[in-house]
Length: 113
Image (cartoon, helix red, strand yellow):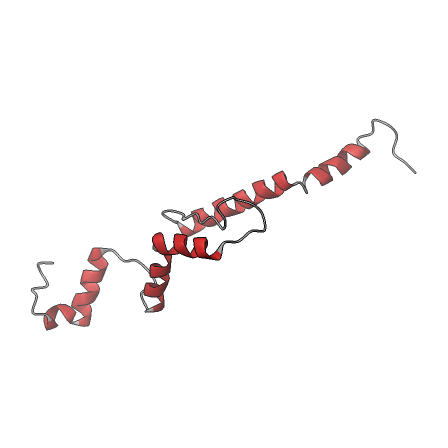
């Protein structure tokens, strides 16, 4: 049985197909990225171009490595691997230094940071 003309049956099929378009997927990815960024409270985003012509399925490893090095991303990864996984405020580090005894070891007066 087919739907009568003008019943809107085909329109609903078009809406389903429209929801599968590249534009729709891109919009959904942007919404997901936005939600992730808001949840993680990121301060900035580093954009890395996998190739200079900006073409699909093309990856320039040397250029990508250069960008990661120049932007400091690789250095951050090294630092975090050494055991410094997050950033702290100066006040937090100072309090931790006093608590752990590093300030006393260095002969510094804890009252004057």
